[in-house]
Amino acid sequence: MSWFKSRLKTCTINFGHDRWLIQIRVRIFDSKYRKSPPFSICKIINAPHENLCKCLYNTFTLEPFRIVYNERRIKRQNVGGGTTLKDAKRLWLTMLFILVTAVGVGLTLRDQLQRHVKQTQSAMKHQQLPSKREPKIEPAKPQESQSVKRLEVNKAPAIDQYLNLLNFSGTALIVKNQHVVLNKGYGLANLQKKLSNTATTRYLIGSAEKAFVATAILQLVDQGRLKLDDSISKTISDFPNGQTITVRQLLNHTSGITGRQQTNVVTTPQAMLAEIERNGIQREPGVWHYLDANYIVLANVISKVGHQNLHQYLQQHVIKPLGLTSTGFYNDNEVQDPSFSTGYKIVNRQLQVPPKPEFSQLYGVGDMFMSTWDMYQFDRAISRHQLFSQAGYDEMIRPGSASHYGMGFYNDPGLIVSHGVVDGWNVSNGFTHDGNTFIVLFSNIQNNIASFGRVNQEILNRLSTIQ
Image 1 (cartoon, rainbow, N blue to C red):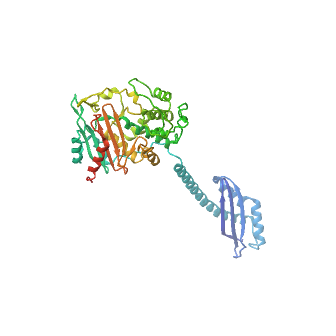
Image 2 (cartoon, rainbow, N blue to C red):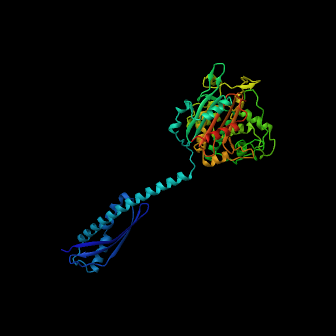
Image 3 (cartoon, helix red, strand yellow):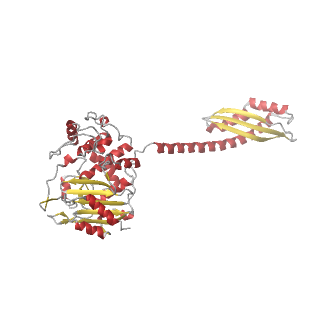
């Protein structure tokens, strides 16, 4: 009885979606080691990969046409003179084993390729689309932990002496190269109760709140929900000259609006916006004129675009992510807290408590309080681009006019600074352009310091001797 051996010369498998093109090239040997010329077999199979083996068996062993075709071809080549149907089946079973092995390798390679393509596409998608998740806040360094804010630190006796000579009343926090060099209270937080200012005393920050409003706007810009050069009419349709005034011009006080007068009457953000609209414009946009009204309008923009009022937005997107536990918005209950300072004003060389303003009139422009430590945490996040993008930071500190005012901050030669004055309180807050030095000075005497600019410069000079 004759027998056959087959030698696989090549096997090519191409696959698509449930479609297989299989091509083999073989040579046949009989018992006398006579060989046939190489010949090819090609077959297209339409089948899902889980049924492929069954289809291969049917195609190459049971299909009569294929068996007869190859049996006749072998005979024409004078190989195995006694070829039988059983012998041919044995041959094709051998070939089937080779094919199944090759197909298994092909399936494995295909699956690995598909997984790699999906992972690559997913990575590219995440890189291209702007993220709408909350920004990742870098945790504080060990030397900046929450326990540090409660400790009074004085590693800068020259600066401490200077502030004492100024009769500074408030809290001073100075950080250089991620190390707290001064964190100390000066004077009294409450004269009547003889309570001292400490490292954790809270103060109203006045117009320094504008930096928080600007932060909210820049976050919405990063999310693609707003553009700095959008006309204000896109958000507030009937705003006067709204087709010409942009969000950017409101941020840097070049909108040209007339504004409004602050009163002691309880009001709402919507009522103040309506008053600003009624008062119309004073000039065409482009000329710097500092007005609280610009940021009152922006607070209303945040409410419309962010779908929550300014206080809610800042709590969710700035205050809570940064862990600002001594920050909030003024209400009468806060005054009863011993950590809340009383504001004073020097009148005829005497300290007096000025009448408190109606804080609903200061929505977005002066109704916020915080500690110096919380302000430092905010500054630190701003300088490290943790609350919004590098592009947003560049816009924030870029002067919009000769005034050096950007968006909530002044870009001065030595410091990026914000200021705030509200009846009884005066604050200065700044950090160097490289983000390595922070100077936060909160005072509960409104007019005790003639120029915080000069004070900041003197502190920078004295810091130069501290490593």
